Amino acid sequence: MTDPDEHVRRLAGESLAGDDPTGWFERLYAQAGAGEAVVPWDRGAPHALLVDWADRSDVRAAGRALVVGCGLGSDAEFVAGLGFDTVAFDVSASAVSASRERFPASEVSYVVADLLSPPEPWTGAFDLVVESLTVQSMPHSVRAAAIENVTRFVAPGGVLLVIAFGTDGADQVGQVGRAGPPWPLTCGDVESFGNDELHPVRVERIDNADQPGAFRWRAEFRRGDRRSR
Image (cartoon, rainbow, N blue to C red; front, side, top):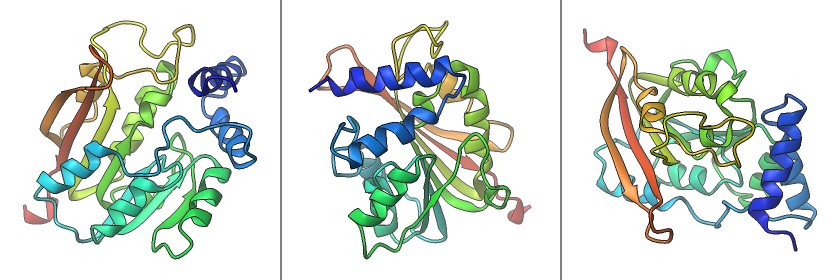
């Protein structure tokens, strides 16, 4: 069988060559559903850095949560298990369908949506937003737009959690000619999730024990609560 990471890069390269930065997701998940491919980032469990953050965080399990690029649903189910009324979306209809089949009794609302053109009612609507590994799957040409859209989901007083592979490189990250996805995020990329209203609480650089020299970002941001002013 073709190496799963190489297969993803081939699919992504074909989509990018056709000026379609997200079309390869549906192709991959459809192939995985047919038993013709493997989704390399799906481990059948929530991301360890999300679980660890929830154990350490003072975030209250109340209100609504949004999981960005939910894939096959493990992170979304974990967030819902914390007590949040959870919406999870993916640009791939096959991924959303597979999530519903994997968790038939789920209380998560799985939705097909595009991060680059999200539903307007989601603006400022979520008390917790989890962005894990989605932005890093997009090339530099759309990365700024993807980041801005993620930040817009956060409600006043809400929290944004960002998890991504990291790089110390400063230039050309995410360009079509660079091998990927993933196209890891720089420190500047992570900091750009913050703005005048969405402030960094903690930005962590965490070494990857399985890959010497590799690391991940875990960053928490909180939006000011206009209701208290």
